[in-house]
Length: 148
Image (cartoon, rainbow, N blue to C red):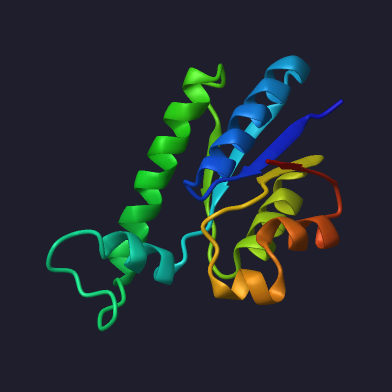
């Protein structure tokens, strides 16, 4: 039914649930699994604020710090996928607005299903403009499954 599945992963609990479900579907249908993560500097800054000496209000992370954080998130995602029975997912780091980046990646690789968590690490923009999952649901050219 599904040849290629893309799952959006931001490190939140709902994105972990989405990843586990995507792995289950990939296993059942013999699908190729893609994990897409689009880092947002403000989310990285918030996470780094938990580290002593990093002043979130005055310092945004460098491009290198954002890239390093993205690789850590994807390493975690690969571990979750492996434990859920998907040992070799294709990992992708996007840029820009997460929903559009996720859709673009799914289109580029010819995915026929996008899986997202219902609530992620969004910010105030998500409350005002709508969440990544809502945007994907409106704009995706393929099936979209939102996981709580």
